[in-house]
Structures are given as C-alpha cells and as structure tokens.
Length: 151
Image (cartoon, rainbow, N blue to C red):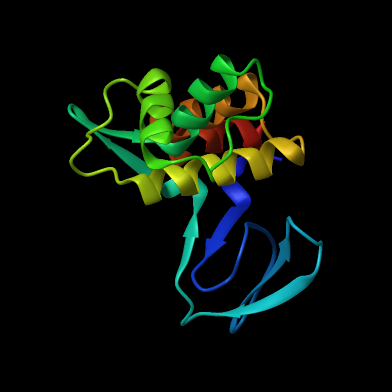
C-alpha cells in the first residue's frame, strides 16, 4: 500500500487507511488498532499524498520527506517524535536541509516523524514505493495513465 490512500483525520489520533467511499463520506480503518470508522463529508481530512513541507525553494511532497528519512535510517524507524524541539529540528535539518525553518514548526516535525514511524511499523515505508509515489504525483498526470489501461 502506498501513502496515496492514507489519511489524517482532524480530531482523531493516528493515521487511517481509506477503505470505501460512501454517499455520505467514507469508511476508514485505523492503522493503530484496525478499527473501522465512518467519516462524514464535513470532517477535516488530509490525504498524506497531498501534504507538502515548505522549503526555501517552494514545497516538497511528504512522500519525498519520508523517502529522505527512509534513506537516512535505512528504512528503519526514525527518532521519536517525543524528543525535545532542538533535537527534532537538528534531525530534520539532516534529513531535509532546505526546509523553511520559519514556516515549518516543531509541531509539524513531530507530526511528520510520528507518521513516518507509524507507517514504518506497519511496513508501509520503503524507499522504492515512496519514490514511485513521488514520481506518480509529480511527473505523471492521470491523463497519461489512461492509454495504458485501454490496451
């Protein structure tokens, strides 16, 4: 599974896998305990594949950040998101030296590292899958894929 179907739901702890869309919202499964919940259309939901991190040159997709962490940690777990803010900022600077320190807060870094470790524990993180996610998001529009399925 790639991060394209992984959700962060405001007010709910952890991450969720999108299972089924319904007329009034969708069904998601918690990556923490496997429980399924229904989520209405009014809920504030973010797809991880749509989240970006500010850099001095623009923005980087979260999949690219996860890929950099996976490369640094050889696909193992990252440091805990419960470290002090200075340690987290230094770590994040090693992973992504070009991040905009004025617009990326310690709380953002904590969330990113927590999400990475959660996905890594579920074996959803690998350098290859993240790079493929990033390539699909940045380089291959959906229209390019249509001819491949018609064959």
